[in-house]
Length: 101
Image (cartoon, rainbow, N blue to C red; front, side, top):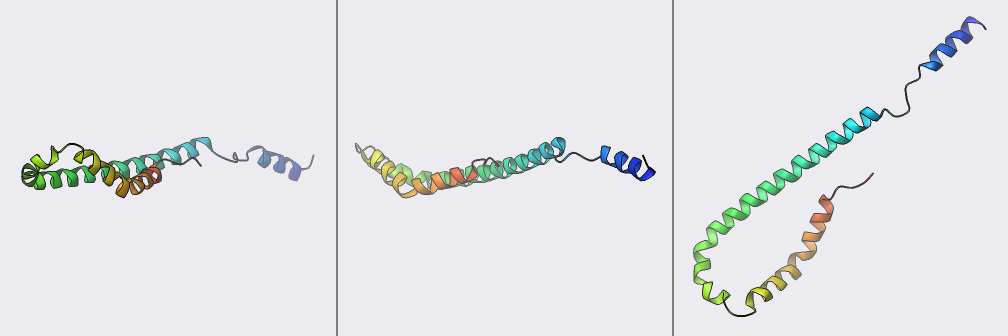
């Protein structure tokens, strides 16, 4: 065995693995943490905005309190709202769902 053959055998023995599992899991964890931070910050901002809107319209809702006691009106309003905004909500929820890759 020549010196060149010995050197080739030595270098071939120390080849790095094709995929480093520790690196792959570390990157996947970092991506998951980033997605979680984004989702939580969006949910928090939405909760604050909806709270502010609810607080702002609370006085006018007292005036409509008698109207909301009409039988069937809240259910009809919910059906109309879900018909109008349901597809957008479903698209938003499925877009934020984690994907497998």
